[in-house]
Image (tube, rainbow, N blue to C red; front, side):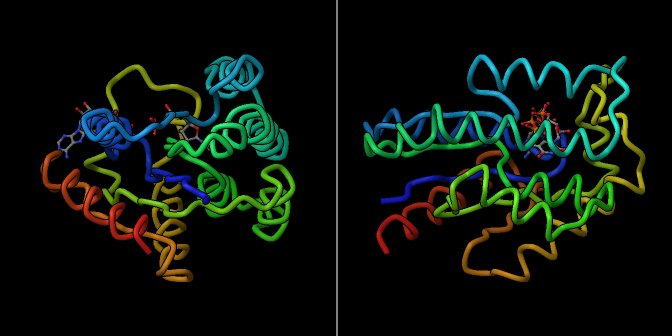
Length: 203
Ligand code: ADP
Ligand code: TYD
């Protein structure tokens, strides 16, 4: 069974916080799981992450897109598929939709090319469920902290396009997405997500 659960949302929306809360629940319920972040999760993908987030690195939009995709190819092959084959629940902090939202909607790279490349690098893997934590740009800024990485340094307009992107993706396939209001309390968001995951896993 495909037990891949993905968290999406702009920087500072609360993904890591929710993944931590979900991990505690999975431990308590003794459900075998693994957690990865994108880009990252193995030696190669973490090296690519260092390059992508380095403020001193000048990367054109096309190269940036391909680097995110390369990191995803390695994570899917080296980590996600083996874990799914061991019947683990795999939780991923970002996946294919981040490239569509950030490089497609944000940086105007051709979305059809990104969709094709996502299928190629993941060998057609689609998440069981994608949770989008929805928060506006002003609130994300308040949460982001001062020491911004290369991607967080993008403009307000960029992040607003990314937010529009996530909303459009969710509208296009309502069955696959669960959009949750990121301004609720951490516990409220966690409860909503946990309920939704249980419904999805029992279908
Ligand atoms: P992300 O992983 O999406 O970048 P984080 O989980 O790291 O976001 O959260 C960014 C900041 O916002 C952290 O300081 C975190 O404590 C805070 N935060 C997360 N969720 C909430 C929430 N629901 N309400 C208020 N603050 C939150
Ligand atoms: P990270 O610190 O993991 O995200 P967050 O700040 O939300 O916790 O940084 C990853 C950055 O890379 C984030 O700004 C989103 C961006 N990104 C893309 O632009 N495209 C992608 O395909 C992925 C996976 C991430």
